[in-house]
Image (cartoon, rainbow, N blue to C red; front, side, top):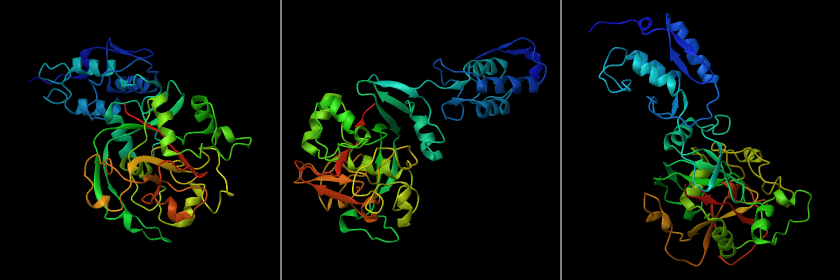
Length: 366
């Protein structure tokens, strides 16, 4: 096969969001064009035809793969003519930028791709991008901000801190695989969000200047079902909750540490909360961008409780026992020590009970 230089394909001229062939004379011109496209607005939906490395962004990494296969048979053969050539280069540069993502019909898009400053775990970012789902959305009806939690596998159960060991119902540790991504509220449901939908406020801490943005509490698992039915949302399963809380960590706390004093940065708990709830989002998020997964208020999950369930739990998409007397609570609260805000700690309560340190966070299927 005769090797042809890129210059033979003519010149490449760049415009605001596209490139076209005219008389390309140097690879530096191509690089300049790629750089221009990298910063150009990409408001239009993009195809993933040029995404050669599977990160759902057509950029310089994919260009490098294509050029490395030049005049060969390879994944860069985008038009299927049997060889990687200028036609494939034109296709790639024509779809430069983020690939199209799926936005649920109940949602309004905020950000298509995960922000590295928010989703700080690179493995989670890759999994979110690979899902093809929009990362950050608003539930259109409630204007509640929700973030995508990708599918994945993790070790569920006991992780002791330097100050506290595990209790028996956190064992045995076991691998769990979640096969489908889901959306989770970035914050605990607030008093304002509850009142707008339910027309009353059950919260104990409701007479403060920032009460509207504090988590709703004194809501029972049973009462929450009315809110969920009216919004189309649901509670996360216990496995979904722990996977989202851990956000790739295997330590006692979701900040990547097992050192109890470090909890101060991520949670309102017994030592720093001043015996009350606080406005959501006041502490650092975990590596998925979720706030207050530790502390502030306990969060109801959907599962019934059985202290021995981990011994018989399915390894894929576990949903908890089919019946029971108590529902599971996760995350700890403003009232308790660092022991209770460990990622693996499990608490329980009767589904009809209400306490001023129990609230919830919503989840939703795409």
